[in-house]
Length: 565
Image 1 (cartoon, rainbow, N blue to C red):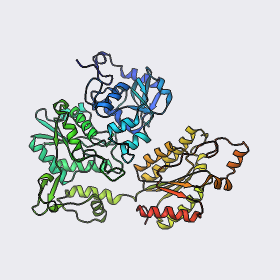
Image 2 (image 1 turned 180 degrees about the vertical axis):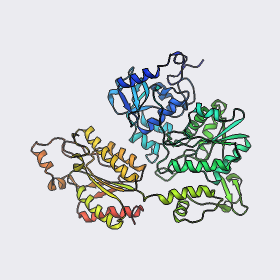
Image 3 (image 1 turned 30 degrees about the horizontal axis):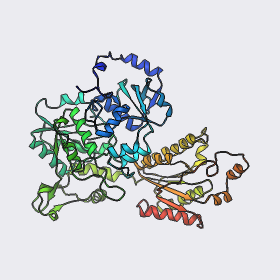
Image 4 (image 1 turned 90 degrees about the horizontal axis):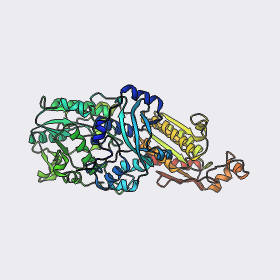
């Protein structure tokens, strides 16, 4: 007999009398709270809905270690992705046995959380186990090292209030199952991209082969940075379902936070679709792959995900449908699996870059590539897009020349492209307003930089330009800003590398003089550390250069990256 997992639904828990809604609301009014990040919010909703069954809460330490080591919970159940509640607050190491209310960013009480485990993870081991790499070019690895907290909490969760999603059509397993045929096969298709003709052919052929009803089950939670936004994709999916045989396809949206973990993610997706009622699941080439690593090699092999998931065999409880890439042969006007193509030169193809350019330019796009109504939907979005927003983050010692450089860049950028919205944020000025009341401890300095990053990210989100000039002495806060802003536009970290001796000679603010007289403590570079950026986009060595020449170096970089004409 299998031992019951702390994350699973045990018989004892099933016999517990559930708290009334009023009791839960009373608890929400009196217990301490935890405000969730976006990923934590989506993970919580998937836990509460039963989509992450057999999990009934965030993983405790034993289950976490078991998932990392063997893609299974301690009771032997298959589970490949750690679902944990992370924090950087060391006080939570003493939280075992306590209860908290989990809230969204609007302070809505979502769930009661009973902490049964608090522990420190081995992030390197987690990265290698889940993603197969520690390369920060992988978005999942970057999130793990730069945004995930250093302490993990595990424990049961109980719903207080329903979650709120910006889209209609998100369903729990209990809501979706009655909408699917009660008899016969259900074949699920996972996607985070628009569905074009080749995908359509793949889905319909797979469904016909397995005599199955089609479940189009796209992710509308968190996907890969740079993906087409969900509203446009949903409109495309609705068009695609109309193209399919009447009554043979169902569209439902999945509020999942993807990890882009390739093989492990494919296994995870299969388990989730089984919970939603699917009997079959399509796994494509490079399923949930994030692209290429720092050396321009793919993170995962083209068939690696298929082979990994199939290795679990019947134990998985859902039939895996491995799919070959479907390509179009113009000469014979037909679609074929890539493995059946004898002459690859006959394959017609349009790259993603070409496709976006054709959309923007209003060029005709052949129907073999995508259906006309899909093209129209994507063209509307592409042509309405603002120019790509970006943030220039100038970091360096006090008196390194950051503020001077920011002002020069402001003028040069607006002279180059006067149509852009541009905002400049100086660290010292912001402290008087946005960060008023913060001191100069490590925590307060990081909070100041993260607030700057949040404001800059909102400007970038809407296609604007943000120039931030701040000491930003600690890598952890800079990394968080990079992760936040990179999801929305371009992030350019500029290390304004001016020798400390030169900064002391300039001392435009008198800070170093005060430190010398003992009138100022915690001065960066004197009695407080400055953690130099290890991989800035621009390492600007200012010694022997005029501010104007430094500004031109930054401008040259912006032009080479296509951010400015």
